[in-house]
Structure formats: C-alpha cells, structure tokens
Length: 349
Image 1: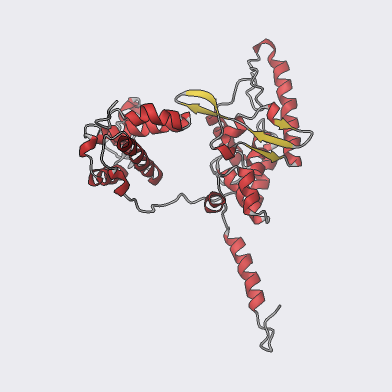
Image 2 (image 1 turned 90 degrees about the vertical axis):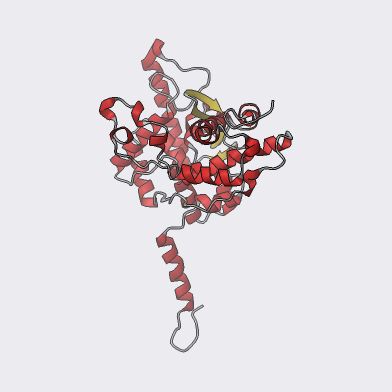
C-alpha cells in the first residue's frame, strides 16, 4: 500500500508494529497523532523537504502542547489553569521528544525509499543540536541508607531493596515472579516486566535482549524477599475467597493478590522519600543510584553493565555513572599528595 502522506503512516501501522515492543509502538503512535499529523499530515511525502522537517521540529520545540492539543479545555471548568483561561503554562516538549519525532520521520521515510515511493530520505539531512540532558543526582550512600531503613516497615520493602541494590527497573520489579527467584542459591532472573500499555496492564518482554539477565542476590535482598513471601501468604490467608491472585505467581501484589499499578508504586515511593527525609527523586533514579554506588565502591564497568542489563559499556558509563563532587575532591587530594614536595625538591612516592 502506497504511503502518500503522513496522516496515516503505513510504516507505523504495518512495519513498526512488527519490529518494536508494544510499549514503544504505543509511544510512537501517540507522537504521530499528537505532533506529526496536526502539522505534516496534509503534506504529500513526495513534496516533503528537509526544510519542512526542520521547521516542524523547531515549531514543535517552542509550542506549548497544552495549547496545541487543547488539553486545558478538556479539564473540568473549575480545574482549568492555563490556556483555557488565558494563562499559558508554557508546557514545551522535551529535547528527547523532539529527537524521537526526528527518529520516527527518518524511519517512515526510509521505508518509503525502500518501497520505491521516494527517491531519497530527506530527513537524513536534518540534524539537531546536542540539546540539554536531564541532570541526574542519584541518592548518596547516606540517603540510600536512610531510605532503606525507612522502607523496612513498608509493604514494598523488598521492591526498594531490589531497586537500590540491583538497579531493577520499575516494570522489572513489578513483573518479578517467585519462580524467577532462587532464595536458596541467592539468584534472581529478570525475564519479564509489568507495564501499563495503551491503558492496559500487560506483562511484556524486558526492554532489550540484554535486559533479560541473572543477578546474584545480596543477603539483604534475600532477607527482604523472604519477608515479602511471608507477607503475601498472610495476605492470601486474610483475603480468603477474595484472593484474586492468578497463576502468574507475582512477587509483588496488592492485599487481594492483584498486580500492583506502576503509578501506585511511584506514589508509595514519594511518600517513602518524605518519611525517610531524603530528596524527592524518581523511582528510576534508584537505578542510577545503584550504578553510581557500584562505581564508587570500585566495581568495574563490565560488572555494572551486567547487573543493569545494558547492551554496551558505553551506555553504562555515559548515562548511569555519576561522579559526585566529593569523589572528585578525593581524587584531586590523592593527586595533590602525590605531587607534594617534601622540602628538598623530591616528590612524594
């Protein structure tokens, strides 16, 4: 089927759906529907130029999407707070969103080239500036200690232990099954994740092929998981006929045995941060915390990569290892000591 415009991209419906994870496809569909179609949907792809794409990306980056998508008008009248009452909230897309839009356009037009619908892919000639990367500030050792101490009285204590000590993603934690945990040998295997996709709570494959991994369980995690198993058995006994647990055998469930909503884990984590007296960070920042703590304690990049399930060491070092200022100062102090003169012109050794 020929793709004459971007209003209903043939690539998105018939090609991308078979190549990417369902969660990724849902994100692509949302980006196309909310950004690409409103501005480029009426343009024939044979007349699309690199200048058109640059203009589209630039305009998108500086346009308040609350205004563009009329989000405020959809809110109840008493809760409107920006565009609908003449007070624009300036909710601009992130650099990451703009880059994803370019990725989608390149992929769609490249498919059209392969199908002989276009002579060349004009999106390949479009380059974006480096942009700004979100500053990551993982928890310190002291903050991590306070957080885990406060979590011991929480139903999700084991979830926080796995996130801080092993760097498991939110979906990997919630999708963990008892058959993936060997408390005797002290080994955990990541085989799936639990995510909300298109309004539906689904079990999906790990993010990448390398994300499916086996990780050694620290003693603290084993202890927390045993407590979790005892708690779940008590919940099942208390729920009786109201227990709704399925054959999935999830480690983390509600009191009635149903899967935990990912956003509810986020809410629980926000409350835990406040109770522990630590900075409010994202749940995903516990993954950054794990990587940085391993790095600071001397773990090599290969080990960190295997623990986190990254596809390459470059990803590990570029994104997930954060060198704190106090670590830098300690390194400079050691260099300064090595270069210090002892008084007779000889450096210390």
